[in-house]
Image (tube, helix red, strand yellow):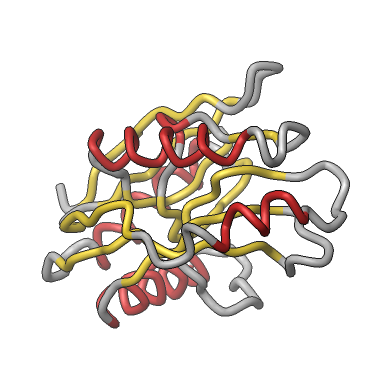
Length: 182
């Protein structure tokens, strides 16, 4: 199965993200906008894994699953890798060091069971859209100038999930496989 590890979002925040996407769509209609119901806070992408690896992943995640709940605020926008040649348009995530510690714990445990360590620093974000062709988006950047400091909401992170991702022509479909802590 194709898998990743992520924190899921509350429905009210998904609704706010959907409204935000709608506000920006006219500034950038050629972007591939993510479906609000599929937006999540990724801790680690695993890719295609076997049934045997699923068992190893579950055992490893059980070792990092205990953590103190922490608050997450969703605000600020940006592009990966940069605004001049964006591949991804995202909304930022502000959280205490506990989020980075959780991500580092997941990363370390996944490395122990054979997954390559991510070379880039953990940058928490929620993907709003992707661009097939990385080129400047001046209309979207202008629209962002009016929204930069707006908070879209906050929530308490107290759990994370192993997700399965199934690709289809309509976009990826996500299914929660297991919740941590269990």
